Length: 616
Image (cartoon, rainbow, N blue to C red; front, side, top):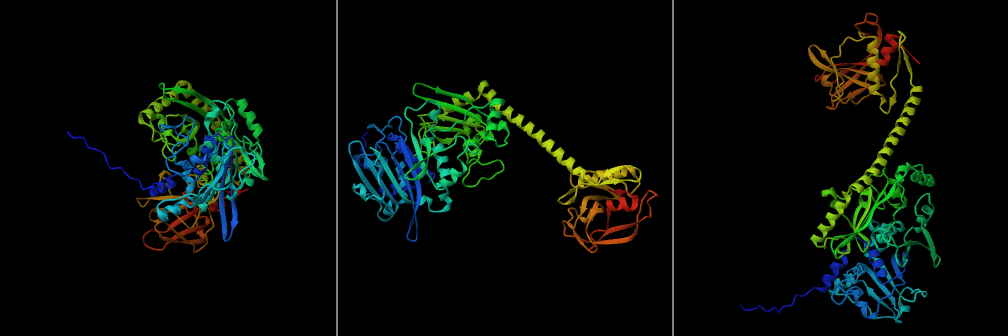
C-alpha cells in the first residue's frame, strides 16, 4: 500500500484568533489576576495597583496602573507579551517551568480590550524601554491584525517608572472597554478588588497556610472609594484582621500580604466567648466558631499528589474577614456582595490559587453551594487549566477521578465526620439558646400586652379577656376562644347548634338550616372584603364591627351585599333570660337572588346589651 504524503499546511486567521482570545475571558476583573500573576512569576516582592479617573475634554478617562519590582521583561521577549501562545514561562520542550502559572501565552490578551496599553520594563542588564499599543481590537477590525510600537524612550510614556526600583515592569491600561458602564464599573471599587485579590489571585494563595513562604510578597492596592473603606474598616470592631495602609506619593494604598486568610481557631466555649466579648457586637458567641480539621499532602502515586486543607467556620467568623459576604436578612445580595453559597465550600486550586468550586465532588454530587460550613481547598499541580484559567476542565479524567476518590475517602473518615458533628452541635446549641431567648422575649411581650387588654366581667362572676388587636382589627383565634368560653357559661345563648368546627379549609362552623348545610363564618372584626362565597354563609360572628349603614360588602365571586342596621330589633335566644331583649341587629341584604340575607352577630354588643357584661 502506498504511503500518503502530507504536504498541505493548515493556516490560522491570526487576527480572528487574537480577537477570540481577547474576548474569551470569563470575567472583566480577571485583568488583575493576570497582571498580579505575571508580576509574581517574575519574582516581584512588591506589586502596586491603582485605579483612577482623569478628567478629559468632554468626559473622563479610566486608568488601571500596575507596576512591580520584579525582573522585568527583556527586549528579546517583548513578543511574549504581545504575541499569542508565546511565553517566557515554558521550557524549550514546551512544558511549563515549575512554579509558574501564567504559561499559556493568553493572559496578557485580557489587557488588549482597551483604548491604549503602555508598558515599561527595566531589567538587571541595564535595559529600560517602553512600548505602546493603540486599540488592538479596532486594528483587528480595520485590517485583520494589530501592530505595537517600536521600543521608545521612557520619557515618551504617560507615566514615570519608579526610580527606587532597580528592575521591574509597569503596565498602564487606558479605558478598558470592560468597565465602560456601571454594570461592570462597580468591580473597580476598592472593596471588590481587594476581595477578589485575596480569593482568586496569587495574593490569595492557600499555600501560605501549608508552609511559611521563603520570601514575603505584598500587594499595595488603591481602588475606587478607598476612603470609604478606610473609614468603615479601620478598627477591630468592624473587621479582622484590621487592614494596614501606606502612603505612596501622598495617596493611601492598602498593604495586602500574600496568602489566603484563615482565622484563628476557636472551638471551645471559653475561646468563642472571649472573642465575642472582644468584638463587642452582641452576636451569638457560637457564630465565632473556627477550626482547622485537616491539612495534609495526599500522595496518589509518585507523580500525582494534592494538598487538602479544611477549615470549618461559623456564620460571624466568615463575615469578620469576608466583609462583602451578605447577611442572613439579605436573601438577594446587591452586586457588590456575595452569598455563602457562592463563596464557601470546596475549591480546586492550582499553584495554591483557587480556580473553581467542586462541592459536587462530595457524596455523589449534592451540588455547588451545599457545603457552606466548609472553607476547604484541594490544591493539585496536575490540574490542567482552560485557556482563561477559570476551570480545571482540561485535566485528564483519570486524574480527576483519583483525586475525587481520595478526597471523598478523607471526608468520610470518622474523625472528620465527628468534627462536622461538633460544629453541628454548636449550631444546635445556638438554635436552642436562640429559641429559649425568643420564647422569653415572646412571653414578656405577651405578658406586657395582657396588662393592657380589657377584662369582660360576666354577671355570673366569670372574667374573660377581650380579644387582642392586630393589623386587621381583633384576633380571630382569640375571638373563637371568647365565643367558646361564652357558650360554656351560656350554652343556650343562640338559636342555632354548631355541628362541626374545622379551620383546615377556612370553614369555621357548620350548621343546619332547613335541612341544608350552611356555615357560620367567624371574624375578629367585620370588614368589607369577605373571603368566602355568600352562597353558603348562614351567619357571620365577629367580636366588633365598624361598618356603617349602607356599606357594601363583596365576596370572591364579586357578589355584593348591603349592610342594614336595625337599632330596635329583638334578640332571639333559646335562653329565656335573653330572648326578645332589645338589641341592635346587623343584616346583610343580597344584591341578587344568588344568595339569601345573612345576620351578623356582634359579640361585643351581645355581651354588653344582652348579657349585661362590663368591660374594664
